[in-house]
Length: 190
Image (cartoon, rainbow, N blue to C red; front, side):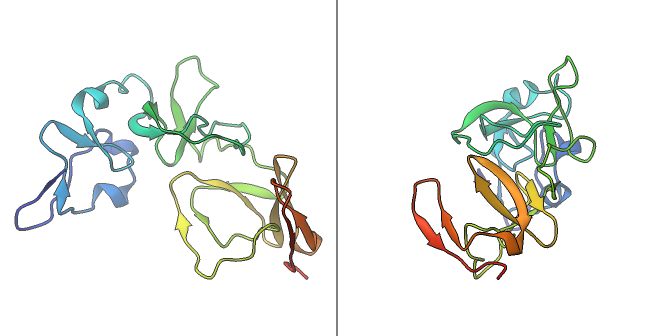
C-alpha cells in the first residue's frame, strides 16, 4: 500500500459485484500500489491474481483462505486447522456451490450451510451469542466475515463430541467439561 496525497480516495476492486458495499465506498488514506487492486476482503492483490479467478462464478482471489470453506447445504466444519492458503475463494456472503459441475460460489441467501436443529445460518454473528461453555463477554463484538450457525432465541450453543447443538438455556449443564478435560461450573440459564 501507499499513502494518498491530501485526501482519502476510493479504491479499485477486482470483483466489485461480489464485494460488500461498505468496503466499496470506503475512502482510504492508504491505497494499493500501482499494478494492484483490492479483493473482496480488502487485501491488495496483483492484476494476475485477480484475473486467475474470473472463470469461476462469484469467486475472488484471497491471500489467506481457510482449508475448510463454508459449503452450500453442508454442516459448518467445527474442527478446522486454520492456516492461510492462497487462491480462489468465496468472499463474505458466499459459499462453495458443490451442486454444479463447475467450481464456484453461490450466495448464502440462496443456499446456506446446514445448521443443527433450533439454529439458523447468519452472516453477522455476535460474540455475545448464548453458549453453555463460556460466560457472556463484557463487550459484544459483531463479525460479518465468515458467518456461523446461531441458536434460536431461548437456546444456547453447546459443543459435545465435536458437534455443535442448540439446547434450551435452562438445559445448559451446571458442570461443563471442555475439550481438554478442564471442568467449569456455570450458571447460564438458571
